[in-house]
Image 1 (cartoon, rainbow, N blue to C red):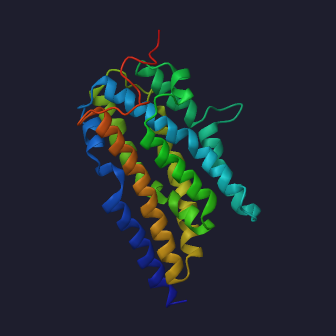
Image 2 (cartoon, rainbow, N blue to C red):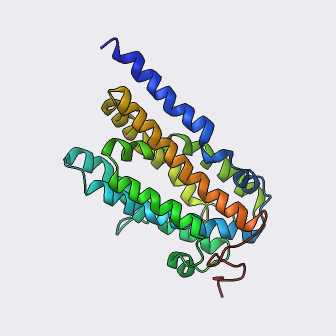
Image 3 (cartoon, helix red, strand yellow):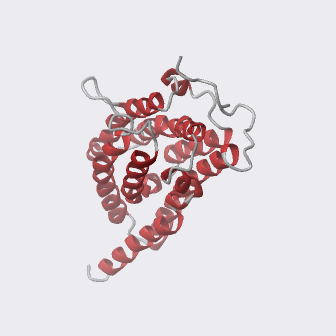
Length: 248
């Protein structure tokens, strides 16, 4: 037991270093967004493309749960689906994201249709859903651990949006406020599960690789967004064009 404790601690430090080095809070698009440097069409492009990721999270979690034999793990995991899909009595994260879309002048039905999502966004997000569906459970759970690093970016985003954008108010940015309480609950469970189930060097390598993969998924989405709407500003065929999908 004494031999295992330092190894477990070192493994957790390894996972946290991955976030410190690779999490997408370091992407230049986020620096632009949080400082007020985005114009409204760049914000709209972000909202449209990020919706595709948000909408696939419960699908990813449902695919994961379909493979889990342990009822306790399924019970712990299914709250993630409700957090995003909502329930009959409480709206979820997808509903809140569409309120943000409305706040920036987009038609929520257009955003929900996923028309205009960049091809690279689709490829990255769909790859994540397949990864969680097909990889060993340990890798699937470990890929969710980017949530370890999410509260800091949500805090930065809330402050930055409220300070710099007229559309930002407690209603339009409520998605991020809710994630400040939802994400820590999820990641506490997920981190403990990964630490408990990665008992060999090979399993720890698998979990670390899964977390690296997920940071790549998030980074790739912002690379596509930056290339299409910031510099060089080359929107690929099928990507959202400013002026499309607006309210009214």
